[in-house]
Image 1 (spheres, helix red, strand yellow):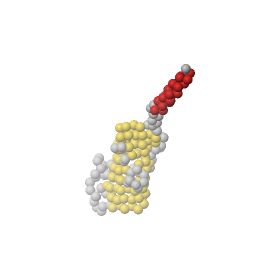
Image 2 (cartoon, helix red, strand yellow; image 1 turned 120 degrees about the horizontal axis):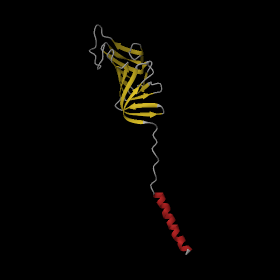
Image 3 (tube, helix red, strand yellow; image 1 turned 30 degrees about the vertical axis):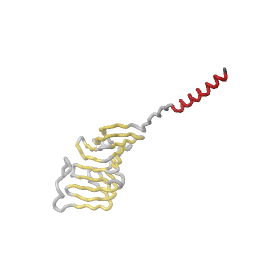
Image 4 (spheres, one colour; image 1 turned 90 degrees about the vertical axis):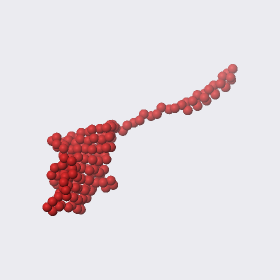
Length: 187
């Protein structure tokens, strides 16, 4: 009798072992590296008095204290509640200290009707420092009274203090290149 039970237990044990081996295992929970928000409107208030940045994008991801805003991105800088400039880029990384890092960007500055192409794909990153302004490896500037490009560009937000290497700019004599093409721009 014991032998008969032993013969039955071995196949049952093997069947149970096979069932456990073939049974689906629970998946490990997905670990998110940080916060991910979709369809965002994001406001940034740097230390500078009266300055506010407003962004719209498809998503914002927080990764280790750094915010990455991307997808259909547009931004604007307001000073004392008045629109100062518009920013368009594929992505903006908001670093500690509220500085902005971008792969490249197009900026429209209303006062002066300036349109800037800051860097380009493969030319290096753009840095926007809240207390200083723009820093880019390359820039193309268009305005009613100025056209050209330069390397190693640095400037404040109003383009009143510019530094650049190998500048190639044209200033029309006694006229302009045309009307302001920046929406809401003023000379």
